[in-house]
Amino acid sequence: MASVTTAHELDHAHSQEGGSWKGGSEPFKASYGKLMMWYFLLSDAFTFSGFLIAYGTLRFSVPTWPVPDFVFSSFPGGFHHKPLLFVTVMTFILLASSFTMVRAVQEGHRENKSGVVVWMLWTIIGGLAFLGCQAWEWTTLMGAEHMTIKVNPFGTHTEKGVYLMGDGHDIKEGDTFEPGQSYLIHKHDGEWAPLKYKVTEGPDAGVEKAQAFGPKAFGALFFFITGFHGFHVLSGVAFLLIICLNAATGLYVKRRNGYEMVEKIGLYWHFVDLVWVFVFLCFYLL
Amino acid sequence: MSHLSYDQSKTIATKTILILAGITIFEVLMALLGKGYLIEGVHLPHILIGGLMLVLSVVKAYLIVYEFMHMKYEVPGLVKTVLLPLFLLVWAIIAFLAEGNYWNNSRANVKNPVKTEVATQKPNH
Image (tube, rainbow over all chains, first blue to last red; front, side, top):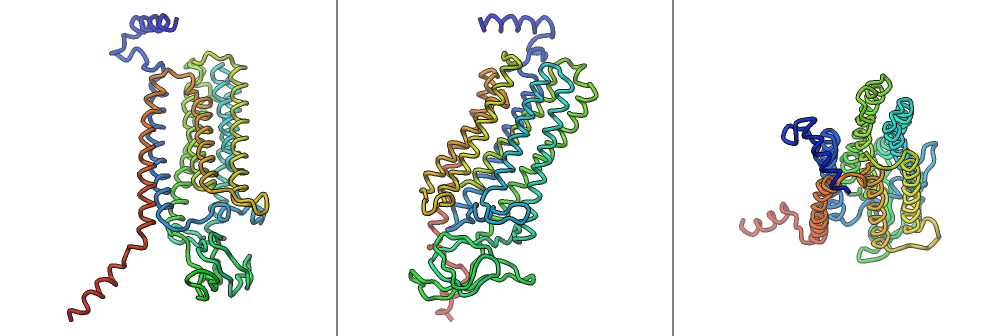
């Protein structure tokens, strides 16, 4: 049955448009634009994989790494110690915008112009909301916690010990800590103020030390990879806006191809969501 | 392009987004449970939680690519040309993570070249 249809379609392509060698038939039954979007996304997947593998390699190459549920625990409105809550909200925003994108594509298939425009507008709002969240996250990390691409104040203890001074935030003098516990070095009057502590167990027991900075690569990897993803979201929003405007003016009605442009930008938008799944995995879950 | 009716595809999209949301909530809860945030004193081995997260993320990726991006309804040739090259990453991940691990294990053997040079030159003068 299937082969009969294919043969028929091939004949159709030959007689109507000049055959395979003149660009008449579509390979893989997909239009040129859609196929090339898939291959672009494949190459983009390799780019992101390269970044995430570099992240993994550097993370494996150092003895300690900032613990995500300690680093990402702020929430708008002055809340602290809410591990992973805000990034979960961000993930849900992006997932929701992926759903509205699917709905836009579906409305396009049945040539419903107003449906396409409305669902695309929801998708744009979702994309902008995600970017807003990311802006807040970055502002908190850079402004309040002073993480930059060169300095990473999020460290992790490798020994058991007791603090000899407090930082006026969460740590008080006399607080004890275990190996694997994370800390944030604060700035006082523009100067870094690493706390002094005394090791209580192990070969260095009794030695006084000061909090060390965390692995330097963390800040650069975080800002670069989430920034690269954020830039994809930003350009996605720009393309969504253009295609939404085109749809609203009735450009795609004339083409009579089931709003294929909406489908293509939909592929891109879902890919951005797909990448976030793995950025979320590497930076926040593991 | 797809042979599903409008209502059928609408139902599939709703189902898919609910599964994706469910998996995400489960992942976050497992991450917090594993680190001892949810139940006092309960910690789970990092490798177990990590493996679970990895599998669940691949399931999420499958749902997004196959349902949302309609890969399920494309012809086999397209699916193969897009998905097969990605298997190159399997070795890339194994090789690079092993390399990173090797750097970490070799840390103790690394000597400060400046200090070593000074130490070896001293007896000559």
